[in-house]
Amino acid sequence: MLWTLLSIVVAFAELIAFMSADWLIGKAKPRSGAEPGEQGAGTPEPYHPTLGIYARCIRNPGVQHLPRETLCGPYAESFGEIASGFWQATAIFLAVGIFILCTVALVSVFTMCVQSIMKKSIFNVCGLLQGIAGLFLILGLILYPAGWGCQKAIGYCGHYASAYKPGDCSLGWAFYTAIGGTVLTFICAVFSAQAEIATSSDKVQEEIEEGKNLICLL
Image 1 (spheres, rainbow, N blue to C red):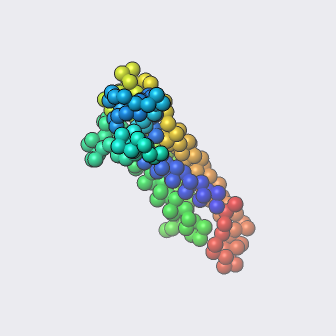
Image 2: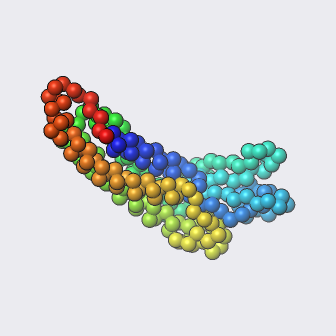
Image 3: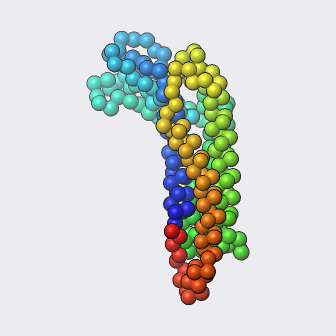
């Protein structure tokens, strides 16, 4: 049960991080322009735009008098419009890894009732898939900072931004969530082996022989 819950949590965490715009927190901007770098008179209190792999959050100049003043959404209308080739590669690797994790999370729910398919342990197969997904996530996270030198990132982080140097930007919660989710992915892969051992124990086998099909793993 612990492995199942952790698998679901990891899949959702990586998916939310991927969709978030809070990968980079830009340098402070006056509250007057819709895009970073625009000049104009604004209030003394600045705001911090954020930039993700394909999304961003900026000041909406049309609603300055309203409490909800941030406009978030994708800046890229197509895959080719993603700001950097490195970020395009990151998007591919993360998407593949997240797809595998979501598939494993769905399958893990049924492992409480079915432990094998075609004489293959579901736990071992899922653990292997989680390890592969973790490798895709690592590749994506390694390539992501290489895109900090693109013009889009420079507009948010200043001219000192370059590959693996965020300039005036700081890392947002989505980046750290993606890293944490990657670590937990490998932990899940290890736990899958423990889940296999638990379902193969003598006590579990006795319950299966008695006709108890639903087995919760603690």
